[in-house]
Image (cartoon, rainbow, N blue to C red):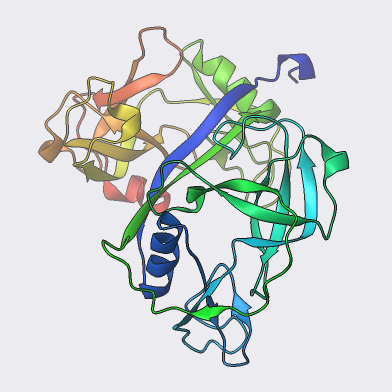
Length: 320
């Protein structure tokens, strides 16, 4: 067994832009923020929801009755953030707050600029601090700031009409974390560094899993027997990629190219890899392939044809 000190760890970032179109309610809300106007929506029971939604969360009734609420409000609860992360509203320590704006019956989550946690309390009065440049996004509210004011209880009707309405947004999604593959995958990655592919066999069903996970997903028992497989294998199925993804933008990979499931000889399931050394339209099920290792030799960069006859379908049909 690999000692715990040798288990690998690495920073990992999952990031992608999420693009969505906006319906009439969300469009009016975000366009309103651009114009320094906060809109909510009134339900059939008279509640005013901020941020507004297009369907009543209790009855699922369609909601279209827009109302303008105040830019001042009351903190209903809060939590102090002593170490802001990149892309958060403020670069200095701040409080996350739920603010019930005057005229609203629900609270809006945002940041409160305060000198320290001792300056924040439930029930304190705050107001919107608008961003200097606004585009029609929740970030048009730069943050909230403390402000002594009397509550305004009556929201005013609003038709939701603005010039040049915002009809769509792109919301970046990003997750930063430290990934540890665990003992089984650490041993697998160390073996790849030696240009070997090593899986683990289930003592119950005898399947060899590559990459190993430390336990059989079918039987639920620990996989302790290490088995070297490959290096050659068989294409079981594949897809043709016609769009260059962000992770290939700086690599010398021209589209279209083929990404395939490859059953390495001796493995009990297929892993995925890129197929090279052959025109994309000549890749086929049953094609016999072998790894071409990366320059530093730590992993297969892609797989290429071996020149062997294609594998018979019956030899890999259970691995599709």
